[in-house]
Image (tube, rainbow, N blue to C red; front, side):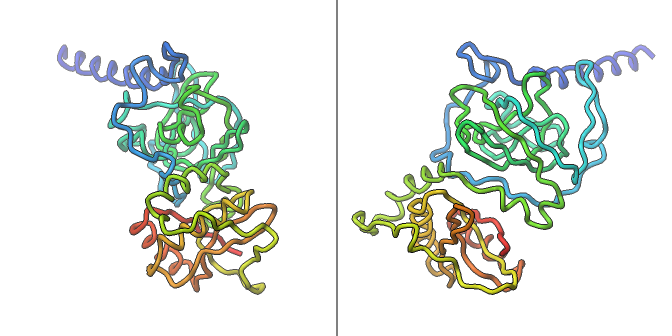
Length: 312
């Protein structure tokens, strides 16, 4: 009986410690950042963090345990359903090396260099678009953890996700969190809103010295009015989309980079598709969704580029 009592006590203490750990993530460091005092970026950062692509939304099953209501520090939380629309504005923070390699709330291993995040109520796992209104930068992350349990924080971003939003230095910042539901994934409607901002220019500039050394630097991209949509009819077609820009030059440079990278992998060339004051970099059309997905997987495996599907 006594052994059983102590065993139960140890289990209870372990659970309390786990909850307390989540509840305390993150706190301000001595430098004013939004993370633990003994947390931080780590010592061996991968090069070109901004080239790490967004998470790719896909429909994933939810374990029943991940969808049950729960209570932390006296506050009750009820996870949302996979098709429940959700939009929230508040402060985002991030967590790094202190939790790198540890288990997340749904049993996965936290990777601070993957596009993931922790949220109190979004389904586990699920996907969300996180936008920083101050800069217009937007990313897509996979929600695979719970937290933060602070009244003044709404989401904990992985290190790389925070880096892509420019939140590493300040430690935290105002963001808009929008759930990507299963219906959004089925219909592809989230693609219309998941436009990549011009921070992808960083990716192009970093890649140019390594990949585009044969391009004549005196060449200038065509002005916006010389760009024309890909020919098509009223029948919807499936394309691969690599990004969308407000600036035609950025779109043109990315298209040139893609075509130089892909080479013989695909007979199609990347084109510019102007629409709604944006210049989308797309490749296609493909005869079916399966063909487009196969092409996307091949391109990602060979070049590291990660396109999404677009239907028009």
